[in-house]
Amino acid sequence: MSAFPVIRDPDRVRRLLALPHVRPKAMEALAQARVALVGLGGLGSGSAPYLAAAGVGTLVLVDPDRVAATDLGRQILYTPDDVGAPKVAAAAARLRAMNPAVRIEARAEAVEADNVDALLAGCDVVLDGLDQGAPREVLNRYAVMRGVPLVFAGALGYEGQVMVVPGGGRPCLACLFGDLEGAVGDCATQGVLGPLVGMVGALEAQEALKLLMGLGTPLAGRLWLYDAYTGDTRVVTVPPRPDCRVCGPSAPARTPPGRNSAAASNPSPGR
Image 1 (cartoon, helix red, strand yellow):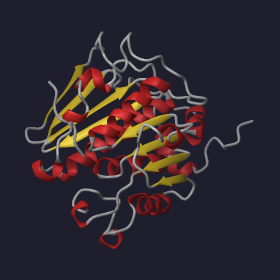
Image 2 (cartoon, rainbow, N blue to C red):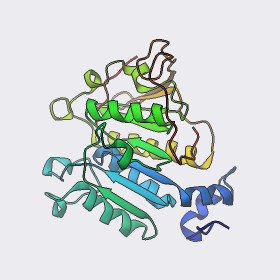
Image 3 (cartoon, rainbow, N blue to C red):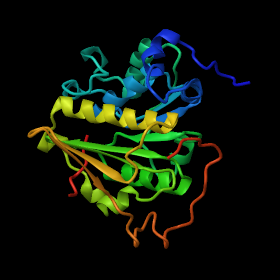
């Protein structure tokens, strides 16, 4: 017998259960899922509330930053009273208020090569809400080496993008961007439209729920692109690079994790 009830809050998930193809087993998988959100800025503010509201069992919040006044125009998890507080603490309080049943692990740390395994241990899906290239490189390598699905997103200026690196690890973000560190834009100088990051973050949550519940066709190896200025949307296929330094045949051997259950133009990513 499962340690988790199939439906912990029937009213909360009634509309979700009404969808075609959603079965009680999918809700049980959701209740047992462990999802990491790495980066709790605009993208994390868009994705975390939907994951908590949907009934994801455990959310692992990872971000070393504190709330700044300049965050408040787009990072809707926070209020002026949170300025100066660690983002993971303020976000955890807000998410628990939304859904007291969600288990939250708050980790005020930056993702690095020597701590990524400990920070993300046992996670079924990882969401990338970063705005820096070095930790994104670490996340991409972790996803490929450990076979953990990674939901990538970026938002900069008027442009947003989302792609899933599947559990098999191909294609990965290095196939798409090449040099991940050189591909990151700067919202402070180039700006970003507030609702855009929320919309892109919500799409990250959507892809994570599809992976966890076995629904539809995730954006695995497909890059979703949106131009908020024109309203244009398109999806392009991202082929694996034969010579990819991360997921290609000559890349280091992959090491599966102990527990992970989930399946599976070149704009600059930002947050």
